[in-house]
Length: 275
Length: 305
Image (cartoon, rainbow over all chains, first blue to last red; front, top):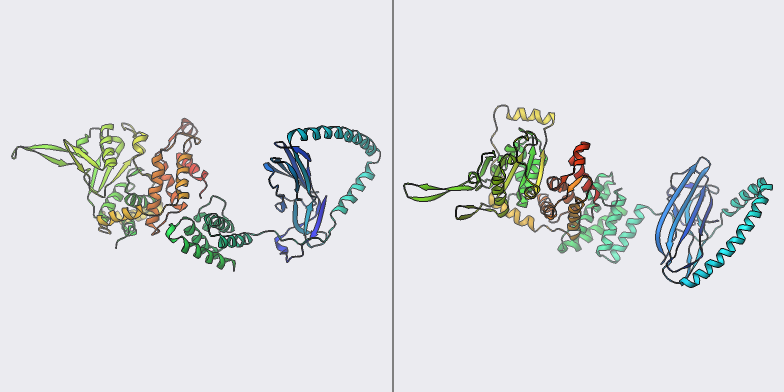
């Protein structure tokens, strides 16, 4: 199920795609697990548009749960696109974990407004191995009961399938209706990344922050990770970015004696590009 | 005060095209290492070496390596002087600032070893006397990739002593036209004294102090290590490759008037440093693959810091 929230901040409409998000859900295959056990968190999005990728889908922070894997599958058709992202997680410590819903920021094609579509939160309870096993046994019994109920439901569905399909369409449409809630920020751009990295660098002008700023500048130039300065300059970057790229190189690889001056020059060059 | 760029300009005034060769010669000079030049006959390998010696005002000697060459032919020998009734030492062509070892793979292993020992130790022994070779001292060895009958291929361990290997290619049509125009009426005079030998020694000292960041050092090491176990590679590069990447990376930064090296410096010179230090397995020959592609792939596989 998805909840849509209007973006009341000054969202740059051209930075967001216009999408019909018919459904966005997030579900764990197990809500009770033992420490050390692996479980899956599946995020499903259904769009009416035929898109190659859904980069706007932001997966939630899983906190101290150990992320073992992350797979995204996109199934396209003229009728729309289904995106399924499966996170494989391992519980490492006891406790109750509430995972915030995955979300998609887009221009809602129904209303024409910047909107955040969010999935519901998921709660995972992590117990010691013995306790979790007991819960698992209970779950098996419940699953058997549910399976029996499903068989009855399928029999019922055969009789009233057309009516069921119509009802389902109505329900999905109802779940994604725009509901104004908390304002959120628009999708991040390369400029935002540079600005944030520059702020972090000014707060703590240390190597890690310097390398983050350099990486943000290289990314803004269109260079891939692992690229050199020449790659960044040749990647058709904004000409005004060039002084900042060169300054970043000196700050990152120059001698320690001149690093303060190089860092100051880098900050000025990055600021000049941002302004 | 003369700069390496002056030597570069002097070489470019003589040599048409061949930017890799010209850059390689000056970088090897700054880094204080030796260079291997591989190319077909007549592509200005010898001229480039002579032009380098002239540009720095150094003594140039050329040794044509042949199967009947003896170690004493390059190192020198002691001759009995009947007038003074004493042995006198006659220095061989190794005692020069720029030594061109032409077709090094045509001489037997004994002669190659004598040359390589001189390259490594920067001294030579004649009889009981051990003499220092002049400074700066750079050996430029050529190898002809064709006509391999009757040659003695250098083993990897000896090739490893060369800082880099430059492949000398045929000139482009426009360059060939310039060559005919420039050299058609005889060889023009070489540009002399763009720098002095003292300048070269100073450059070597200053290049040695070019800052080389730890991230860059690790990058050089990763590139050298990536050759080991790489696809189509039988034997990867030794740790000397990482040392050569650092030395030439510093030299390149110095040539560009920088006091610190960058990832571009290391990545640009990596193919020249690796190509003669790697041996390829049989699959490369069977599939008709290009060794240069293998080296390029290895270098590209290592992300720059």
